[in-house]
Image: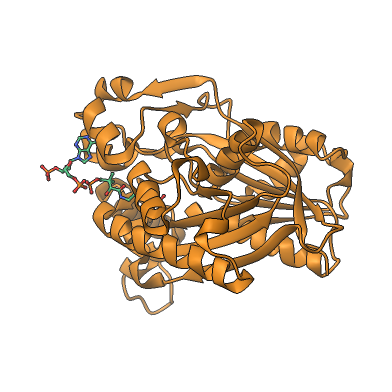
Length: 352
Ligand code: UT7
């Protein structure tokens, strides 16, 4: 059974740079606080009403497709991971198909809603499809446009300061060499803390506030009123919410655990890792993981300083930058790991 290998990789970040000092103009925060707690210096924001997760994904995808040496018509499956989709539905997979001008309908498009670990979940799904022989050229995307959905008042500062926009893409193909490509993937979830890092609205959970009426549902306009009132206006539940300290504590345990799981499964140790590309959630989390696994500085790639946390896009953006800078080379053992909302977490080991 062939493994999936990364045949092409690309990323796109919007032009507009937003520094910590820029955020200080709209909320009570400081460059010092953001840098010290997260390592972030600046992030990118897409052009409002022009750029979307889909348009950014298309830019990243074009690069990945070209580097894979194929044409867009060769893509036989799209997997799109995002928590900030263009629409509530349909998902970004079909929007990207249209944006790229892929007119053939023999392909499928799948949307992944696993937030920070979306790329690893997508990679695992793609690997299974390739192992089974079902698809030969899978386009896997992580793309986020957080800037359209953040609370820019002081109330939202603990979250807003962390997030940025961007997209990363890979083309996955069967590897001719069974010792190359995706060697193993490990996925986990624990719904106990689902609301501790979440955006609750729009969502059907508003239904639990409906009055008890004999005919089942109230008239549609009443339903809409309750839905809007309860969820959107009063609670501001259309903004993300997070228990940062809980997420931090869980992340620093789960990252090393899931990395060790992948290493143990394949008979490797942390010393065998040539490059660890962790989800870029917080530089302090990445440093904690590095210390736990006793990895030297040149074996962990971080770029959160420039882009903030781009959720599903952070791993492919970082992996692409590492590769472009020659820090990921042919034959290297590359480890990817993520933890985030859900909670969901996962890891992948790739022989490049
Ligand atoms: O992608 C995965 C998802 N996210 C994560 O992995 C995030 C994990 N958590 C974290 O990275 C950290 O918890 C944060 C960076 C979010 C926060 O750092 P912290 O050291 O846990 O700070 P805190 O939430 O305990 O807040 C400390 C203080 C509070 O003020 P008081 O109550 O001590 O007066 C906050 O109100 O810092 C305040 N604060 C801010 N101050 C200035 C929160 N956000 C800001 C801000 N600027 N942006």
